[in-house]
Each structure stands twice: as C-alpha cells, then as structure tokens.
Image (cartoon, rainbow, N blue to C red; front, side, top):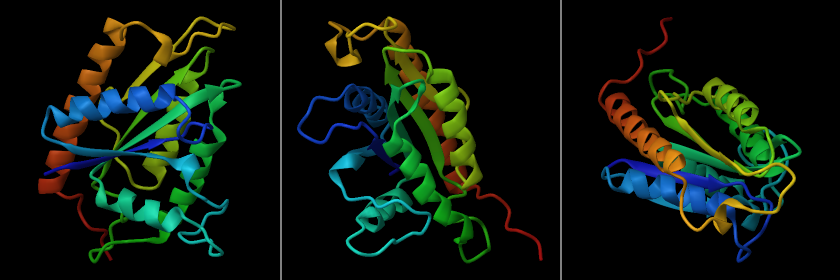
Length: 202
C-alpha cells in the first residue's frame, strides 16, 4: 500500500483552526479513495530547529518527522500564503530536507528519488503560483518527482478576511483539481515503486 504524509505548514499551533489543514485533508481524502494511506502532521506543533542537517541536536524534533517523510511514498507540502510567500514553517521544511542531498540508497540514488511530492496552498492574497514554483524547485532538487498538475490552491479575495475554512462548500474547481492531483500522484508513485530510476554510473 502506498503511503502519503501531509505536512501542514500553518503558523498556528494546534488546536487553532487551519485552512491548510482542511485542504491537506481533502488531498488525503482523494488519495485515500485511490487506496493510499495517509497522515497529516502540523509541523509547528514540533520543535523543528533551523538548520540544514538531519539532526540539529539539543531537542530537535525534526528527526522523528524526517522518518515519517522517509516512510511516505507521497509528500503533500501544505502552506498558507503570507506576504505573497510560503510560510516560514514551509521554508524551514525545505531547508531541513536539504540534508537529504547527501543521503543515498545502496545503489547510489538520492534517498528521496522515487518519491512523489505535491503542493497545496491557501491564502486570501496573491502568491500561490510563485509559492508552488519555489516549492517544486526545492522538492525536485532533493530528489522528489513532481507529477503532472501536482498542485492545488485556493486564493480568496485580496485584503479580505474570508479563509478557505470559512467557505460553505468547496469550490468545484478546487475539488476537481484536488482529484486530478491525487490521481496523478498515486499513479506516479506506483510506477516509481515498480520501476526505480537508474542507479548512477561509476
């Protein structure tokens, strides 16, 4: 069975409501309908230290999140939009993933090669496309493969206070995009699970 991990990069600790949590949950529900087991983690609930090592020591809680990342076939990176950018929590996740550049499997492949990543963004300001582009670049750099149409976002009206979680129903376009994202991510993860990238040549 394929496994998905959704990292919620909201700035708000639990139990505060989170629009990112809602969109992440919808992505996980769409993946579940395709037989993918999923889990969501709110990163800010954990003491993830700044740095680019797998373990920054002194109580750093990234190592236990890192193990969840390594165990998942599909990573869902969910972030709100703040001042047109991904949250600082999402940026920290990408920085911590940088440590995986030096990790390889027994055949010399990057340890994250063969895994799939998708991105979910919410916000009531512009920035989703730029956030997705930045996130895709970082995730691909460390080894993730990005599926076709591997993102979903919701932008509310600029300079207003309505959040995604305040909507009475999910917009049809967001729902259909989420379904496409899930189908393509699950399809790609299954293919990569059966057909690994070639090992580097000496």
